[in-house]
Image (cartoon, rainbow, N blue to C red; front, side, top):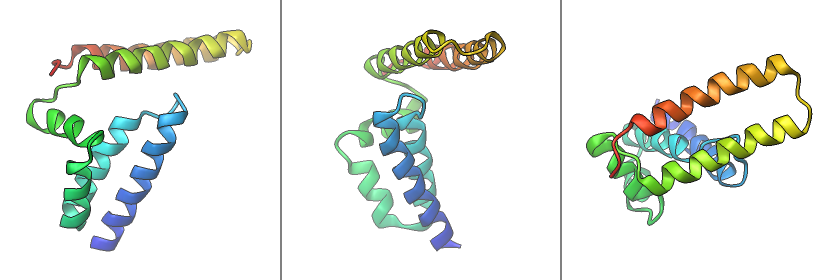
Length: 117
């Protein structure tokens, strides 16, 4: 079972890394998931992700108080707006835009109602 958790954690890290370049994939939630999965499978991998200079502090903020740093909130908001604008420019069907707006709006509400670090 530990290998399954570790494998899923590595996949989560991979998706998080892809999310750095694709605004459709959120990076930090995948890293939070990876930290959880590593905590169940590998102390070495868990320590690695917690001590990572970029992701470690964000994970610690979330674990400590469910907080998201203001800079991360701003970057996520800009990414969400960019994705929606690209959809509008590409002429995506109105129904899809409505669904996208509802989902992205819910993500923004969740994001901005979390405490800031």
